[in-house]
Image (cartoon, rainbow, N blue to C red; front, side):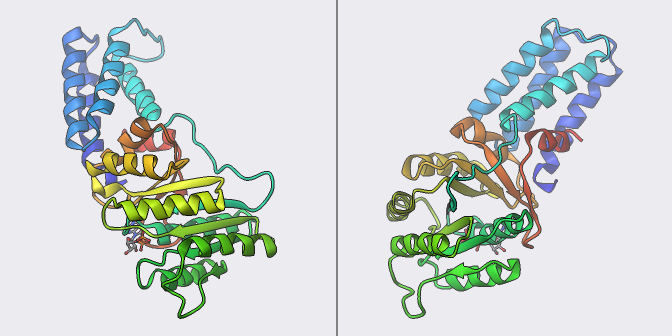
Amino acid sequence: MAAFGSLSTRLTETLAKLRTKGKLSAADVDGTVREIRRALLDADVALEVVKSFTAAVRERALGAEVSEALNPAQQVVQIVNDELVGILGGESRRLELAKQPPTVIMLAGLQGAGKTTLAGKLAKHLLGQGHTPLLVASDLQRPNAVTQLQVVGGQAGVPVFAPEPGNGVGDPVRVARDGVAEGKRKQHDIVIVDTAGRLGVDADMMRQAADIRRAVQPDEVLFVIDAMIGQDAVATAKAFQEGVDFTGVVLTKLDGDARGGAALSIRGMTGKPILFASTGESLDDFEPFHPDRMASRILD
Ligand code: GDP
């Protein structure tokens, strides 16, 4: 995966160097951990995450983890793999569906993060699983966001609830509430509410998102974040966590040549699981997020 291109290369090269060694000395382990630390920092992984990651790898690699089946180099690879799975969230987490339909999923994130595209992808994915999603266009900030959602809804084969034409400057909270009511009335089992972002963290945007959250009481609030934003990822995620309090994360643009820092930091820094990954502009470039698969791709 391109997002981890250089990080992936550096980690695999570092670990490959151990292969020629029969036994690993403490100095070998320290050297390896230093290189891993540098590779993670260069990939914009948050410092706190890098520290705990490297401390765990070092401790386990120096410890008496003797496995008959694995040589020392393989053991270190296994440890790094396990720890990567850990910082990516361990187990994969599926969408929490409401006991009483419809399940309401609200999307939040900065403008350009890929929310509207994601709304279409998620709707298509859920439709493929036999659900009957409804998309709700509550992003009334960006002039063509409603039309854009109607286009992706059309491509996904999913209906879109939108404010009446000419009403585009209306109240996004009302649109969200009406959309969820429409979802109930028409017996959609899932309602996905797209909301407005801004280019940067902004008090008005946060207030609006929080108002929508209160109005529709979503079962899931997915924070959509562009994996390419590098070091800003953590601050942005924390602002949304405080302002809106999301339940899960969607990483977008993992196809880009980002360095992977957002993906590796976000779980550790927010405690919230990553549920999905978006990997391109087409509606099919989308997948449920599996920490173990992502870790193997990084160490491939
Ligand atoms: P929003 O402002 O959060 O609703 O963002 P949009 O859904 O409008 O997406 C912003 C831009 O990013 C659009 O040009 C999308 O085609 C593009 N985009 C969205 N997701 C991805 C992705 O996973 N990979 C790539 N390469 N582009 C994406």
